Figure 1: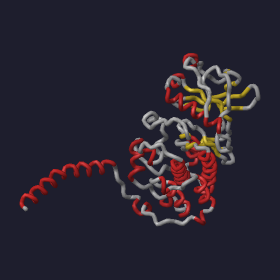
Figure 2: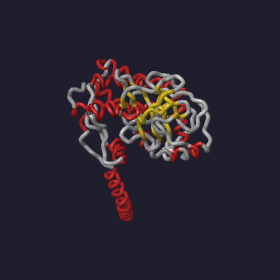
Figure 3: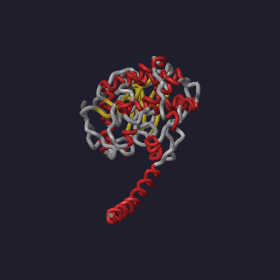
Figure 4: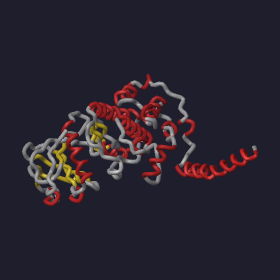
Amino acid sequence: MGSARFPASFALTRIPVHPGEQLDHYRIDSVVARSGMASIFRATDTRSGHPVAIKVPHPEMESDPVFFDRFHREEDIGKALDHPGVMKVYANGDRSQVYMVMEWVEGKLLRKILDEKKTLPPDRAVNIALGICDALHYVHSHGIVHRDLKPENIMVDPEDHIKLIDFGIAGQAGARRLTFAKLSQVMGTPEYISPEQVKGKRGDARSDIYALGVMLYEMLTGKAPFQGPNPFAIMNDRLLNNPVPPREIDPAISPELQEIIYRALERDPKNRYASAHEMALDLQHPEKVGVAERPELRDWKKRRTPWVRKILFYIMLALIPIVIFGLMIFFAKR
């Protein structure tokens, strides 16, 4: 998928955007959100009268080639996809500066819902998860992996229909890879990225399944399964430890629903659900889910840290010369 690229001079001629002003044929109505890289505005298309969302990069970001590639990748993917569970990006011709025009969605981010409610009833959590599964099945069938699924990137309307947003670091079949090193600050969020992404691998559809498992756990329990004081501690916790079983936090969660979460959170991708459709079938028919006797349900209180591994490694290094010396004495006596 290709799209026109803006000339570098656009970064120099960029005009700050404020509510009440006009940006080409869009009237800027209000600020919806701001991040470190861009602002999102609610606007009105004066040609059609329809509301739209407009994403405008901050001036300093337009000179960043990684962000520039990310921004246009998000735009390309958004224009190519057409599904009720994916926010649509509109093709837009001549523009006076860099920005992206998207459909306007009434609703709230899943993050805001969780901030307000803390936990969701199982039926509602499953319904939202099913909507995400449906959108992921469509996206994955088109050769795209989101790679940054989290409550901040899920819009939920008043009827609990969802839309996936922000495909800026999505993996796309045939696209040039944006490496972990280049995107160290935007390669997903520590609480939601999969173990393989933590290890610097590209990730595939099963990485999105993992992130959905984290979100389902959070919707039901009110917290993410892996914790830590900083991103590196969180990622190490994911690699070394098992989360508190959901039913330990809320016994009202069924054993079958807990098993579905564990299948989505398998560390080894080959042990996870192979597809979003497969996960959806279990969510729709929990009575058919066999509950496994998992060691995670017994061993979750055993906590390991990366320091333990380091200590054992240095002990082994220290023992090597002792063992060699012992073997030399042994063979010398013989």
